Length: 573
Ligand code: ADP
Image 1 (cartoon, helix red, strand yellow):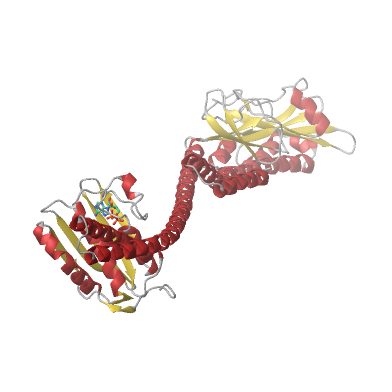
Image 2 (cartoon, helix red, strand yellow):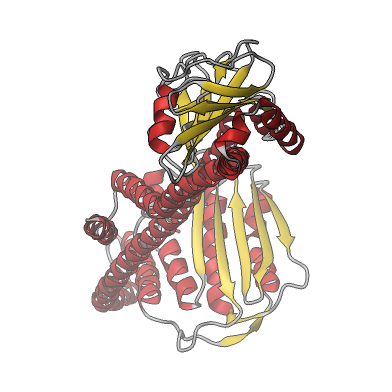
């Protein structure tokens, strides 16, 4: 799918490049290119960002949850060990001593004292016979003779042989736990040894978890009744205001919002040996805080990446399109130039043909006029002799003028004989100006020369260069008003090229005039000009391998700039 879109866009782009491009199409192409490049570059970034997002979240979760899990596991082991130790002690005594001995209160008290020395937390010890009656008792209360046959725990110990109670408040309103173990003798008689434990040991186990002050940990039974006090949820024997999770013997952590609105990680583990559940609550705030910081860092990196990609895509596209439009322009210019050259050369050929054709009749007219003049002179009494002589003179002059024009036309069309020599452009300029200085000073036109020092010499044709400068400066003289200026500047453009500019502050030219000045016979000097000067100049400079450009503004002036190569192109002459 993506490949298809991509190839579709590329085809579009190629199509766009083939046609001649309007600014509108460039705009569309730019949008498409930028879009495509941005999407292609941003896609991997997006994928990376998503992967990173999840990985970081998982890693952070793990970092918070793993210590909790480990702590719960450890506490569960300690709790089970605590209960197992005491249960085995009771089990040992009930199995090791006969009923008679245990029913003797003195003996029971002695055993109880030893037990208290060995294990912490024993409150009392009692022997109960199979009918549920307390036969003997060692401890702070007077419970001898009490009957337990109606109590649930008694029945359970009768069935299972062992029993560990939930926490309950004893007579002194202290939380206690009962462990009872039944002994079954070979003769079928049975009796039960019952100890009460004080649950301060449970509190110690919880305290050993050393959680942060804003966290909470406690022991519950499977019904959710607190067996140790909780920071969040109240005292022993109060009910946890949260539904009990399903039993699991692995430490489990899950997020939870409790009824008081606390955002917590709830972790718990069920004891497999008893009905106890160990639970710890840790506020998610610190995790959320870290996560938010990481997330905003990620977002920042992602967004700045996107912006960067977009900027680079935009810049590259811009550059690309600029190159394209430049080469398009160059192509167009070259095409126009070719058209222009073509036009000039065909006009040139036409002019040459015309000049040639006109030259013959002109020669005949000239010859016949000379003959006529001779005849008039020979005849002594020729009526209106002076008038006729004047007329023939006028014809000869007109023929001369026509000859001049045809000569120049032929010069434009054909190559005049060229002689390449090493020349100093500055020298040719000064020489040429000698022809024009008279007119310039007569009209008070200031000719300023800024000729470059150490201008490299070039290989070119002296006569043709003179003609070029003469034509341009002549036009400039015609364009400037009396008192105006013409400045000529020469410089070394680069190692192989000499630059010459001829600037005047004359009448300048309109855009329309500028478009035609290099065409033969184009002139604005009605009756005065032939319109051949610049076309000849242009032809010469091209032949010499140079360039000629012009800038002009109406009533501000004109600047002709030419670049002449140090060596004319091979076979140019
Ligand atoms: P001509 O000088 O015989 O008219 P050119 O080919 O030398 O023929 O010049 C063509 C036309 O270019 C001129 O008629 C004139 O309108 C314009 N032109 C050339 N040079 C200048 C200039 N320096 N300032 C203003 N117009 C100029």
